[in-house]
Length: 149
Image (cartoon, rainbow, N blue to C red; front, top):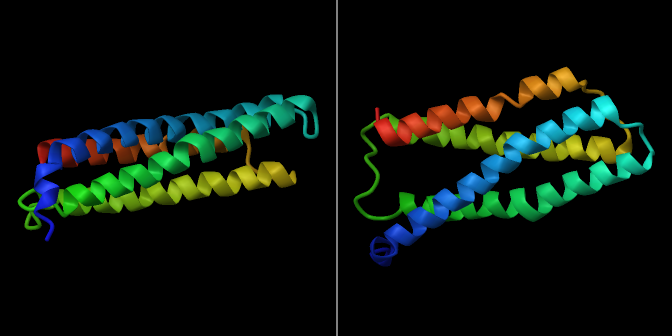
């Protein structure tokens, strides 16, 4: 029933990597935009509107589709016969990290709503610190998949 996934394996793997790259780019860039937004922009100004537009387009136009594609092609890889070694630790480390990465994505989306409503309470320093979160998760995921501990 799922044997067709084996024939599509290299395509799904390639598309998964592309989706992850674009998703990660957004996960790194959006908190950076929030830092500049909070530190350099006056609420209600034209620049505030411009930042909100950039943040919305990044989230909806790049990050959300990339998140969906990364999950879709990643699940295709998981269900490809003979690919996963469920006796090893690495699939679980990657899975937990991926769930945390997805949580971070939605956390960023909620912070965008705060900017839109004019209720953001976080400082640039806090966004800078949160910007390290996807980096740590990326390291765990890459080492888990490549080293396969």
